[in-house]
Picture 1 (cartoon, helix red, strand yellow):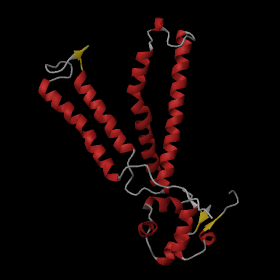
Picture 2 (tube, chains in turn orange, cyan):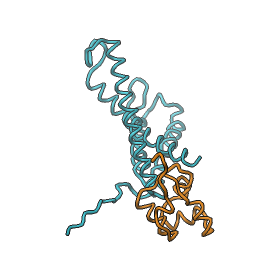
Picture 3 (cartoon, helix red, strand yellow):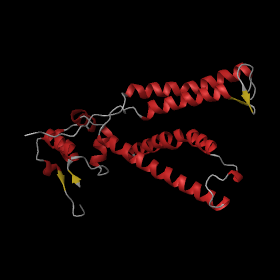
Picture 4 (cartoon, each protein chain N blue to C red):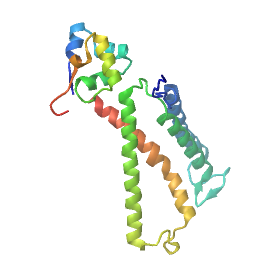
Length: 66
Length: 160
């Protein structure tokens, strides 16, 4: 699963730490999601999308291999 | 309509318990150092009974402290305990379970091949009490110790 977290963050001009604090996870988790090392749960994906004010599937998209 | 929800209540202790566990673990080198200063070595003691040159009291004390520390360190929350950390915990438990099973299997296969397929053969020096003792001495290392090492390694790897 790919995501546009880095882009959304750049639009709002916030750091990984700021996003992590707002969502209630660690900075390491945000970094792992951005780099595709960790796939978030549905709850976390919904929380992130809600924070950016976007639909979940515009922030997270399935890939061919999923 | 009844509403069913999953209970996400964590069984882990607060993060402060982890710090307490590390401080407790520090008691081991401190008490060993104190013992060394008091008696000059670990093989003889004037206060406690000795068996085959081993001072039993200090060993037992350190071992109990170690188990209590492992308990606090392994079962406490991280500073930020989120779902990724929970997943790493699960993965670490899985890996340590695999290693434990493989160790059991290899150990008993080795025993079987070397001493024949006779379980706890007395002629080979085995008895159930010795096996149980060995098992319980090693258990904190093969379960809690290994779990924590794998857990920390997974976190470290995720940061690279």
